[in-house]
Length: 327
Image 1 (cartoon, helix red, strand yellow):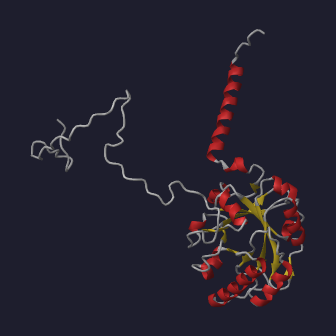
Image 2 (image 1 turned 90 degrees about the horizontal axis):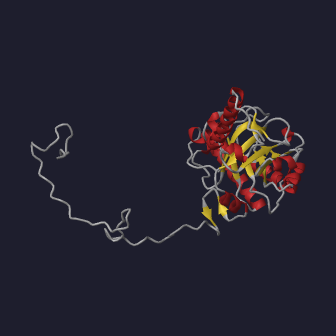
Image 3 (image 1 turned 180 degrees about the vertical axis):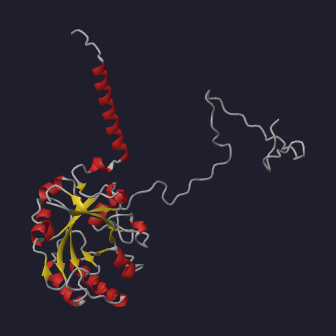
């Protein structure tokens, strides 16, 4: 085949293709999270939460407002967990809960049921409602207690910190007794500042911040889940959906699911990662015992250090205090 003549147009097209390829490679290096979850998006992304997008284990939280969900497509998009609304107050069951619960399990998505607290109802009433409707599936993730001020609902009651903490404690205990698993606490910036700072630190926390890193919004050293956007887009769900990230490793997530790792206290109950030289300190090495070799393989020869000349007016560098001029 005769060689093709290189024209200016051909050279230009080749250079442009190489430029596009280079930009694509650089984009993958700068934002590796896009390669993990190419089928998830955000209709109104915010750069302040980019750390959450880089986390490997991504999930969603859903309720009736997401309508009928195609859980097969949600799974195929890379969803690793789902928080599903179950109950609210003492008399409301989310109309999509039973379907979402069953379909998420059928498609192999780890799921957790959450209860939305009403401050106008007693804690005991809400625990009775929880026990009536939240399943006790042994393969489910630990449940969630959603605590926030209900500014846009019929229950706008503000109670004292003492009353709020007492109610939360009763409901956390009820959830744990019912499911056999330590609940996760979900909250937002305002409620955490008003009520929860320094409280229930042995429980896992799921925190909301859609415009800034959690460390800039919460007086808390550690958290386990981050709700980082309410405008997420996931195949299988029509419209916006909340997206969340798990702050931990693959091994920690799987161990938490199996009950071997408490992500709230960071305590292992078997199967903890092995560390090299755990509990052992290497013996000290005498100076020169493992002397390096030069490029030719010959051992380096060591000579005793020379006598350091005394500082005098002749050898002191007047521009740099404490140094000696080089001869």
